[in-house]
Image (tube, helix red, strand yellow):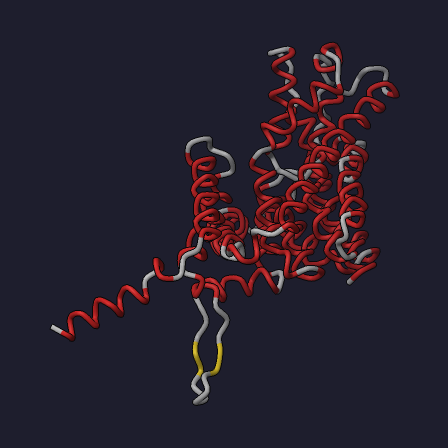
Amino acid sequence: MDYLINTIKGLIEQSAFNSITYKNVIMILVACGLLYLAIKKDYEPLLLIPIAFGMLLVNLFPGIMAAPTVSASGEYVPGGLLHYFYLGDEYGIWPSLIFLGVGAMTDFGPLIANPKSFFLGAAAQFGIYAAYFGAILLGFTDGAAASISIIGGADGPTSIFLASKLAPELMGPIAVAAYSYMSLVPIIQPPIMKLLTTEKERKIKMEQLRPVTKLEKILFPIIVTIVVVLILPDTAPLVGMLMLGNLFRESGVVRQLTDISSNALMYIVVILLGTSVGATTSAETFLTASTLKIVLLGLIAFAFGTASGVLFGKIMCKLSGGKINPLIGSAGVSAVPMAARVSQKVGAEADPTNFLLMHAMGPNVAGVIGTAVAAGVFLAVFG
């Protein structure tokens, strides 16, 4: 009987009920809220489900993120499962592989056909620099402020990559904020777009893009890699992998690599990255004043980036004699292809016969490059 009682006591002492705190309960509720948004509302489920589940796991069992240790007797004690997943974030492996997959899935044709899109992609990066100065004013260090500011580009992998280099202690809140705002693009952007444009501007129909030759599509990733990496070598892991994936796609001779990069490999890495990022949000590290500041700054940065893209689109509209729809400027943030779809949706609400998707893809993919370049600038300055 004593054996049975001691066994039951041991099980109770080892259960999560014995160590869980009210902060853990709050984080578990947050995780369930994110799962609701992902499953019920279909907000970036590929990202939010693994992130939210990682958050759930670490707040039920913190040991799943424990680092390996050596006991007093010299025995090696292995770390938790998600600790080893997290090493891929820490060393910048998963973000770079995500960029490889994005490159393999992305058609840079609209950007090549309309190089002016680069300006719209660059304009949308103003949100990054606005957030940087805001973070400095709130007391963050240069490296932390730079990492937080990348949230304004709506680019989760780049946010993780930069945070791993400049502010690893803030990687969890930064990554969760970045991916949350990416998933909320269809909610956050439309009110800003409508506020800054007139109905007449939203109805502008753009001319069909010129055909892009295969040679142009093959040369583009090679030339961009050479130019960008020569100027900012620190961007090589992100820009290099993005352009390598795109070269797989456009060369037409390595379909197996294209399929693997854009499908199986991409989804495997999303699982590893998402769960490990979510697992950095233990109650002790996430429920702090710094996290609230990061979430607020991320929202301001994202709103600023959307607004600056639309406003620059209005300028280009005037200079072109009304040939450019300002709505495509909002797609200059890096959420591919979500932001481009939002431009299409808002334009179609004003005129159902208006098709802006391919025009918006130009600034959208330019924004991916622009955010990586902004991260390279911060690494060169503060790294």
